[in-house]
Image (cartoon, rainbow, N blue to C red):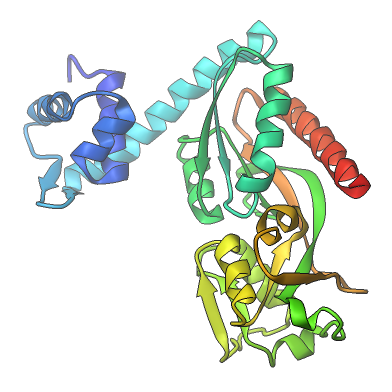
Length: 304
């Protein structure tokens, strides 16, 4: 296997992840013909096809699947070696790949970026927004370095670092602002608007309403918190949103906000990263910086 390079493995891993030559080439910052040439050279080394080329997407052959598994182990080990060098040099510099869930990103990401840029001016932040399951898979396979998610994750291979807790609030039409705040049991009888499957916030809202295995019959779904709030304003039902989203999402909607008097639904926002990451000490430091920034943001919001 003389001539096999890490660059070729990275190109192949990107192709396997995106299942499309054009998208993989874009991610790798090369032209599609150049990517195709590198994959053909790899296939020449193996003496067999690694991918099945379809009209819309590619599929890995059995040999391609075997190569992908080994390539990911190799690339992760190389990345961790590079991180060992970075950790030994002192203050964190260079690329840091950060994942963040959609129900946090629009509201807290600017605070995170500002805090880290102030403390680590030479840090190159690469950001990825995705649902929790996708981010955890990306972490395990070495595509990102850390993720901001709702805890707990309870994954043995990952370190969890709590940042802050926040309550959920009830969003309903403005005309209902003087109505009693419904209990979880009452919410189960109302038309509840929730995020689509795959969002952890959806599961947290359902848990508060104590549906268990039962799901509400009067349920409508939206792709974002913004969509849910606008649906409430249009009189289509009620929803729950996290406290951090209130200011941004309710200013252009004819809705009212109600905070539950007791047994408030809430979530813990935190960071997770691989326990084997050589930058663990630096990531712990980053967690402390983000936690302090979040506390300051919370105090400033209370003063408004």
